[in-house]
Length: 275
Image 1 (tube, rainbow, N blue to C red):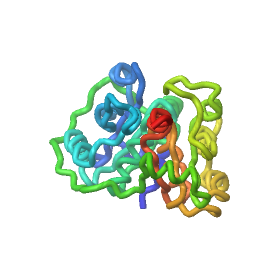
Image 2: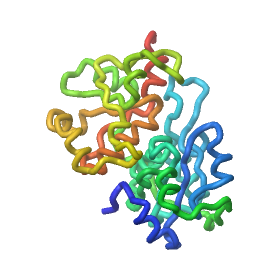
Image 3: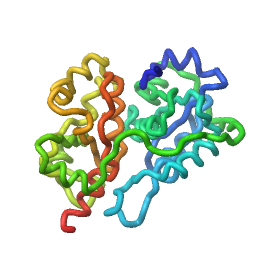
Image 4: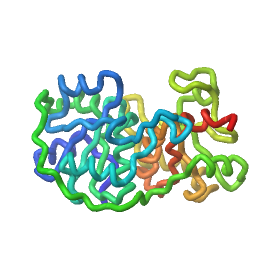
């Protein structure tokens, strides 16, 4: 079974393999420009908004980054030349949080086996001298990826509403503590958090260098949570279903079963408070 995290040293030993494909999934106003100037040698760019989301004008229905249909996602993979047996390596410039882990989750959610996130992302690659390039790599011929549905668990708005009143379920908010408390909200219209949610910031899965903590440490961080609640009763969310995937990645790295993702997250919930 392929580990969810790959080190820069492991990547250095395999990146010339023709079955290995590297993808930069950095998200932000200048991410594409940054990619065009410099990226890991051989890396292709993937855009969160246009390729990993089905962005709608009404954010009350799905939030800022709702999932595309499986069919749409498969068409993206085919355009990128990704096959069912491709070894997919993913990185971004935010230590995996925006949006490498989201792409990882989506690949796992269609049953892809060989998919890994680069530990430390772009910054670690630069620190360790990974070859960089401004050349846009050749994309293999369009593939014929086979998948039919999402297989990882998700919950929708109504299920989360019910969960807020269910003592057998727990809602995890992975945003920074000041966003959770409502003292700071840089993106969405309202500040605060879902009732009865608990705050476990995704950043606490990382060390001071932006590398994932050892699996044993991550395991201990979530041990009481998984002791008290079955994974089917755990709901993980963030602002728009992106950084939540970073926590799901960390849980998988610690060998926990991946719990439910609430894709709509706070960006959807906060727009339905009065509905």
